[in-house]
Amino acid sequence: MREGQDLSLLEERIGYRFKNRDLLKQALTHSSYANERRINKINNYERLEFLGDAVLELVSSEFLFQRHPQLSEGDLTKQRASMVCEPALAFCARDIRLEEFILLGKGEECTGGRRRDSITSDVMEAVIGAIYLDGGMTPAKTYIDRFILSDLEHKRLFYDSKSKLQEVVQGKLKKNMDYELLDIQGPEHNQTFRVQVRMGEEVLGIGEGHTKKAAEQQAAYKALLLLQGEDNVAENAAAEL
Image: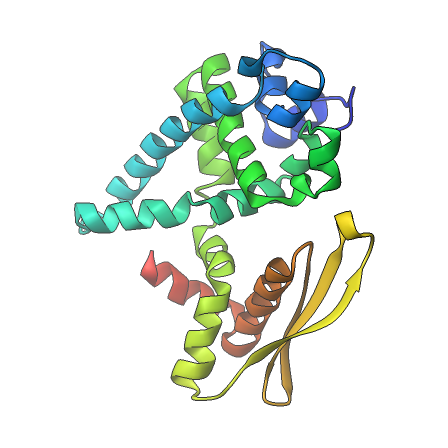
């Protein structure tokens, strides 16, 4: 977020208006920004992230408990861990372009902090904590249901795409696959990688991302949709949830 950016744009995007907008600003404030401006340490997002993590764990646990009455405690724990892990939360955060509003210090900005999963996932949890403090459990649960627990089949498929593609190509089709870096564009601190995944001579998918890993993930996701068809892939992923 650039200094002075209108937070009402984010409120409109997430469908919640804060009574105390300072809570939202705190949820978006990275420690590097607070340190540069000599803001009290408790005014960065870390405490709100702690609270939001607890709220998210409760809501996601209830969701799984109700949805999967046949699963054991151990299986429920594994399912919850995959749903709220760092890559999954970062994926959800980028769905609403939350990274655009994060307040970062100059050094963190220049080294690509706005694209870092660890930061965007933390801010996603901090916003949950801010909503909970501002409006209670009901709006916090609404936010989680809408932006984290919705469309789980495709979300899980995306962040498991590389391993799932390997299972399909090498396990089922008994063929080899490889990723090839096609291009890198942009300055060192803001690069875009373009990668293709191939099965022999056949190009299965091409992806772009701000890291090579992210580009490979996007390419693998497109390859899965090509190989299995979007509807079939979604059904297979749903069966695993």
